[in-house]
Each structure stands twice: as structure tokens, then as C-alpha cells.
Length: 162
Image 1 (cartoon, rainbow, N blue to C red):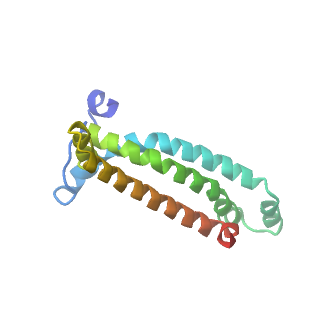
Image 2 (image 1 turned 135 degrees about the vertical axis):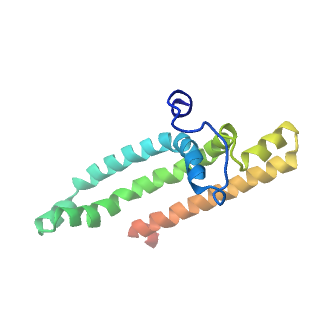
């Protein structure tokens, strides 16, 4: 609200289709994206920093440095790949909060999505519609977690063997 009301940098809400006006669409998308992502990205940044510092102190990184690899090569080849494993785990855990937060943010910022029919179905006590939307969100959650598991396996060869 500070960006929209006090500073008047961005509009508080509304929706314009991407095909109609791409610049306006992105302007209207900025505040909802910030509302959804600011809390989640802070956790990811802290986790990434902690994981990188942990991997930097491991023996294989010291060995790579002792072999004469450049610092960037050590960082990109040996540190980042190993540090991303716990970060991917945290991202997978955050998907549920992200989906739930998306429903709320869609409603607050007046964006089309599953929030409007879900809330109308709850108000009208239309249980089949509520179950259908919740089932859709649940399937999306399972697919996102499957993608995180596959990414986890791609990053860590020990998981591929299991």
C-alpha cells in the first residue's frame, strides 16, 4: 500500500490482459508479485547464504582450490551445485504457502484466478465447486513438489541412486 497510496508509484489494483497492454499489465503485476514473494524470497536468500557458507568450508572445496582452480570455477562447479540442494528443499516446502497466498493476493488485488470462484462457492455453500477448486490446487501442489523432487535428484547424484 505504501507504493500505491503514499508514494503513488503504482496502481493499487486492477487487471489489464497482457495482450491488450503489456506495459500496463506488468505495472499492475508488480505489487501482487511483491506481496507474494517478499516473505518467501527472504527465507530463500538466508538459506542460500547459509548453504553456500557451509559448502565453502567442506574438504572438497579446499581440494579444488589446492588444485589451482579459479575461484569462479570452484564457486560455480563445486559450491553452487551442492548449496542448491537444501535451497530446493525449502522451495518445495514453500509451494503450499505460495499457492495459498496466491488465492488471497488475487482477491485483494482484484486479479482473475481461482480465488474469485472459490470464495463465491464458499459463500454460496457450493460444496462440489469448493471441492473441485481445492482438488485443482492440490494437484498443482503435488505436481510442483514432483518438479522439486526431480530437480533435487538432478542436483544430487546420491538421490538418483536411491
